Length: 362
Image (cartoon, rainbow, N blue to C red; front, side, top):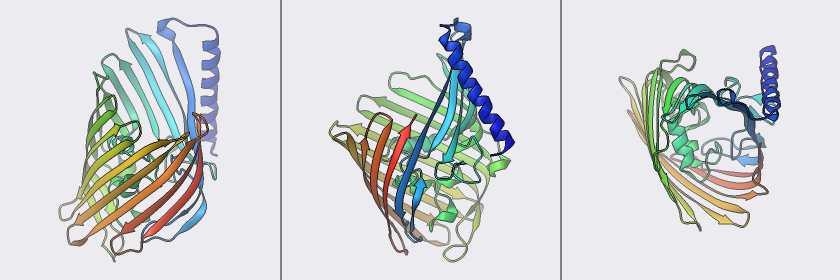
């Protein structure tokens, strides 16, 4: 671990300890009320995984149902109905102890923001989870699983790991330098707006996003639009099957809904991403259906997604993925899961994945 990271971790530990000591002395006045919370999640699995057209892998790996992370967040009442708030969270790989989802990730890769909150909503500045990714996770039986959520596999894996270019890698699951507004809940309605200037570190231009959602009782629905202009994203794979090209703009639309019938909760989702430059355009259209069924102390999960890719000068490609699993809850913070997945792709041999894993939140 670098000296800078060691200093960072020591500082955060001191903050948590100071907060606990201050709160133990009794409730302070409104102008000085504060709290810092340490939180996170560890997820590890043993698995056999083979995506369509790729070699099989047999190993122990992190992040089966959730990507492991840890972080701190807190708030302070500063008077006048206002509160200052912050969140710093880092992905990590528990199999090796390394930070980040991969070696290219910044230390606070999951989130790093500071904000101000009131009855009118909240304004945040910094690295934040994108609205499109949040909408995708919310309306899928497998949530934020990067390994077994079919919609995630089709839309957020990096180009180099897939026989078919995936759409969401145009923007990652979080954006740097975001200024956002989160509206307060009005009845069942919520909403958010994102804006970010060009970011040289990730070769992304101006980024904009908007989300509107409604949830009341067993029903929920959400819609998102995102746009990245002036980007530099290398697409395709070395020929064959398709020559590389540089995308300069990305547009994403997503619509998701869910309904909880108690005996079964159903999910539906549509995602469309357009990547283009002056000469080439690639469209990715994903349809996803899924359900969770409570059983005993756990639940069965099933999700299916199909994505069609159309690109200038290249034959159409379809990808179809189905995941089936059971998640058993030992407690509110610890669960054991088993998953089987089938992945198929035009012109490639299909692949199968099997996993047994454990997850613990704190």
